Amino acid sequence: MNSSTTAANAIAVGNTAQAQASNSVAIGQLATATQENTIILGDNSAVSPSVNVGIGTNSPTAKLQINGTLRFVDSSPGDDNGKVLTADANGNATWQDSGSNRAFGEIYRDTDLTPTTGGNFAISSMIHETNTLQNITAHPESLQVSTSGVYKVSYAATLISTTLLDRNIQMFIAAGSTIASATILNRSIGYAGTSNDGVSSHVAKTTLVRLNAGDMVYLGYNTSNSSIRLRANTISLLIEKVD
Image 1: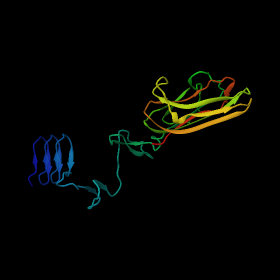
Image 2: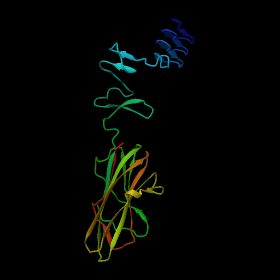
Image 3: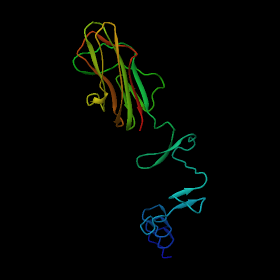
Image 4: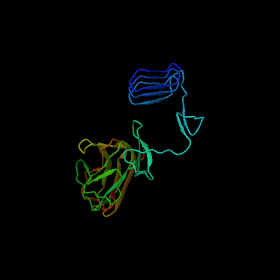
């Protein structure tokens, strides 16, 4: 069948099959094993582009078709019940918790905030509820993501004035690896305003943003007005991974 081996402990089976590396096995017409300690089934060249492997079937329609059950044991055997097979960017698969790719979290402020005037500021002293974070780290002034992807980010706040003069505040989301390098998302900008003492004005907005692992998301504001407060328990920042 013109099969050939040119390395130690190599095996070649099939017409013109070649095992060229130590401890390699080439099986099937034109199969060529060039890497040590590998088993190559069939050939995928232009001469024979449709080589399929069947287990439990004599008519496979895919590169690998298994009719029956498959047992896959990764580096942590014995704890795979209910898990899903998940691939990384290189296609390497492992068993993962069904929710391991999910990410969500929320922080909020439970005390009133008297805004500082004259610049962009991140809201601080934010807290979170127990068991409301997954693959997200909460900080007093930000939410930090652990995996790259597209995230839905939402915020809300209620402004109250203590004067009859016109008062307003600009709210926004900023994102970046540090607060110093964070960039304001222009599409996230929203406003609240009032001109009556004791009257509230609410602002809320949602946007999508692509984040890198380790990025932090901030809720910020800008105002030149005094005699205003952001009300406790109305100030919140929420994030959820969507892709």
